[in-house]
Amino acid sequence: MATAKPLKAGSTGAEQFTSTDTVPPANLPVMIGDSGSGGTQGAVPAPASGDATAGKFLKADGTWATPSGGSSPSVITPSQITADQDDYSPTGWADCTTARISFDSDINAITGFAAATDGERKVLRNVGSYAGYIPCDHPDSTAANRVTGNADILIIPGGSAEIEYDGTLSRWVLLRNSYNPAVDIRGHFYSMTAASNQNAQQSDLTFTGTVDIVAGTSTLPGAFQLETLTSDTGVASMYFADSLLNPTYYGAAHIDTAQYVYFETLSNGTETYTYQFGIVPTPSSTTLAVNNSIGIRYSHGINSGKFEGFTRNTSGTESTVDLGTTVAANTNYKLRVSIDKSISEVRFYVNDAYAGRVTTNLPSAVAVGSRAIIVKSVGTTDRTALIARYTFTTTY
Image 1 (cartoon, helix red, strand yellow):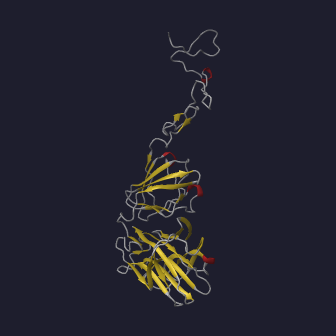
Image 2: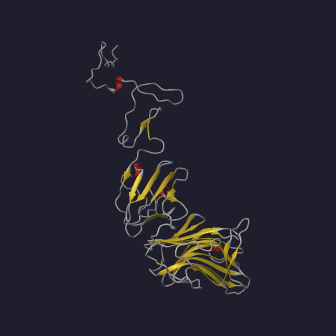
Image 3: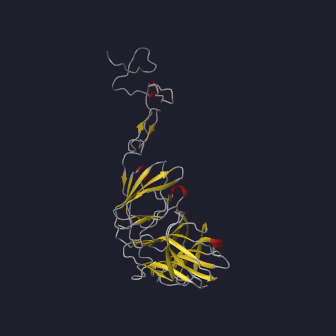
């Protein structure tokens, strides 16, 4: 039996379309998709322009959709990034699964990417000769386009990072990054803990004043203990390294330093001290006010007892930012300070979250290293800062 053909609308007889006729949509029944109780057969909806490229398929509900897990592989190679990029959305970004990006020698930033659907993933692969980075939760990109995280995300030549869009957070999140500062040799990596005493490349942790090692407790980690002792001008510090005080220059590399620290007793009006951590020229120095320095500091009389980020330029003029965390006794804090190669801003992270930045009174291009220091100014009772982990990293 021959296969039936659609009848022509308005025909008085059983006139059928021939194989060369175009069937008007009005002559065809419309497909009704399943919404829970089944559907009806008929003509499917026409796909939109670009649906084939996106790898869409017809769902049982009668709509065209992207396969679970993303669209078919799509690779783009945008032009080289030669300046910081905000709300980055190169041609083809919306549909790509891999972006082959490259940077110039300035080690520029991508502060955010055009938002995507919940669960969408993209691989960022550095095919150039220079590193780039993603500063997390950076205010220069729209909030929904930012990448959330606990540190600047470095993407080195030949390396890759995979990000996923979280619709609940309205942020991109980092899933993985091939960069490992302990393995990559395009810069310095210093990392010290009280437990191992030394675990680094080219590192030699050095101390001034009285420094002990204290055991961990049920709530606090074992740590290096910087002590002021009973002098009202007591000082103790730690830094990398006595054999090479200034291993890098501002403006030569992307620089990052971080610490895991707590304070047994807070500063107050009768027993006053200042704790300061960051990047300074000649870190063996034992004074707080060092020109061309950047860092995080704490004292009860500074920023109402909250951590404060600061920059100090070559003439001693400072800019500060409230980092929003009030310091409490016997509480672990993760502190991180990062400065870009272009010396355009300093970013501060507290407890795995972006806390603020400074873009004025930045240091000049001088030789620097990392230092942590506690300085007593009032009272003769010993005060301490306890540092469980300390790192210093450069990327060239």
